[in-house]
Length: 231
Image 1: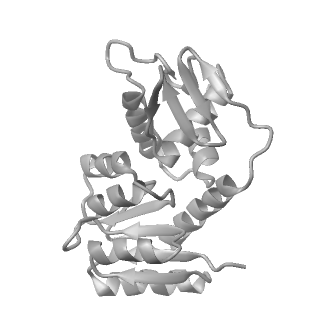
Image 2: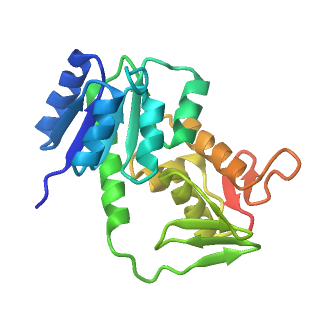
């Protein structure tokens, strides 16, 4: 069986070593990179299953590394950064990261999140059967190709944005709470992660062309309860 390989990119060697120590105990193979260019080279030369990226790295920052990764690859990306504002988190998720943790961090929580993202990623990579193309009102969602097309235009979504949209669209009119969305999309227990779900919903709505004038066109907010698909 192929050993799962994780990229840890951080210019602080102590932090990279700490992360590697805990993940190696889980049986993962770790490749470390000290800057953004090394991270990109590692992605290009190794089969990476998940990437943990610092944002403030020399040569190429984590945002640029993520942009280059997302041009070709769909592995989960976790940002680990000292930048802790909501804007920083939103920017990271919009660019293409699947998760965002702030320093200082609990190594065991990071391990738990890595395990959850890998579990979800492995499930999505399995051959899919009995999945039908979803099409409504000009919106087409193909779960096999993991593509979204809106009025003939391809919409680029991050893996988590796609998972949320497909979850809601596949159960049209069912209302999902923030907790339920997190548990089903992230595949792990809910731990005060409501803001994570709401950030993904916000960016997903923007990509689907929703604004203040036509809010709830595709994703309807049911106040005090959660979200439902409005197709």
